[in-house]
Structures are given as structure tokens and as C-alpha cells.
Picture (cartoon, helix red, strand yellow):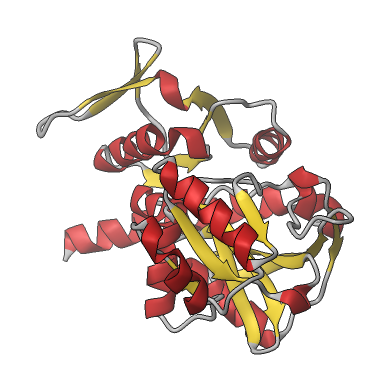
Length: 303
């Protein structure tokens, strides 16, 4: 296959591993800087250009779209889809997952476990919002935060109110969620490929930090998850339309609750914690899935 790896920095661990895995399997993989792709939008001849050169002949695209370039990155992925190129994760699924509020609403509609979550525009509703999530302590999250950035724990009613009012005063959209005390600063990352959890790790936050993100100094180790956790992760990825996803869950007293579904999950933590070749699994799945879809398309055309 001729594969386009859409990302900004090809030297990041995850991207190096995907390139290595593709090369090891005899595929031809090329890095395309997402922001250097130009689109020609036409009903007759849609096209994409990379640094003024026509992009053509690609069998598949691996989108690794950073949070800061979601809008443009999703548009580039969509352009490849319009051109008939297979994408590992679809543009619509990427935008669903990246929008924290929208993804929570979709997951709730599917009956999946979530922390009690509240959202309001008017800062005067702060007391009501806190009441909806059971009061303090409460977790306040920026809608566009990533890797634990923009996530604050309001330990008391007054501190939670102050944080909410400060964010809303700056016209920043936030979610307010119940604090799952029993998780003790840890979470589970389940890595989903296709309809299967291929690996899972438990992440523990740094001492004194309720956030478990590895980028914030947390640690990780391989873990065996329960059938309910496995089912929850697969259903969450499917609900958002993602074929590859990192599903972050907390173990609560009433079962697993989903914190986030990541459409471009990092590979370093999960590979080092579990010793598994996740990059290779992704490439193998993509090759098989692309082949299946191509055959299905041919059959439909014949019918």
C-alpha cells in the first residue's frame, strides 16, 4: 500500500513507530505535514496538493490530527475521503471525538457510563451546575483542553465556584463533572483497534495530582481489564465511529465511567507498559480493512 501519514511532526514516538511498522511490512509510507496540504474543491475533479505538488496514488491515510489543528486537519482528511481514499479514522469521527461536549452527549445517548456532567453558558448558574454534579469536590474542564491541560479540581464549593466564574468571565467554555474519589488519581487507557481492545494500561497520577496523564508526570503499567470495561471501551469507540481509539475510563463504585475517547492516541505509553507492537497492529488492521472495503465497493459496483 501507499500510505499518507498526516501529522505535523514525524519525529514523535507514535509517528516514528507507525512509519517503522509500515516499512517493515513492505508498505510505502510518506509523511505529509497536515498544514501544508492545499485542497482544490471541485465536483468534477477534487484534488489535494502538498507543497504545490499534486497528491495522488495513495491507498490509505493515517490521520494524526493534533488538537490545535482540528478544524483544518479534519478538512484535509475529508478531502482525501472525497477523493476516494481510505482513511483509518473518518473525518466525522475525529471531529465527534475532539468535541468533548458532543462526544459526551453521544455516549450518554448510547447508554454508556459517564461521570455526572453539567454544562451551562450563564455564570449565574454556577450554584445549580455544582448541585447537578453533587457539589464539591468537582472537576472543571476546558472543552478544548488536552493531555490534562485545562483540567482543574475544585476541592471546595468556594474554590470550584471561583474557577467556574473565572473561566466563564473569560468567555471560555467548560464542562463540570463529578469527582470520582474512589479512582484515587488513576485511570485506565484501553486501546481499541477495530472491534477489539488490544491492550490496556493503568495510569497513576503524580503524587498530589488527581490527573493521571503521562504528560503530567504520571506512570503506567499493563493491566487486565474486566469484561464490562472491555465492552465499554469497544462500544464507546463504535459510538463515535472510530476504528482506532484510546478510551480513558475510571473505575467508579457503579462501574466504568468514560472520561474521554481519543482519536489519535499516543503509542509510547501503551507500547512500553504492555510490550506490545501496537503500531504493527494498527498497520495490519488498516491493510485488511482497506482491502475488505475495496472488495465491498467492487461488489456493489457489479451489483
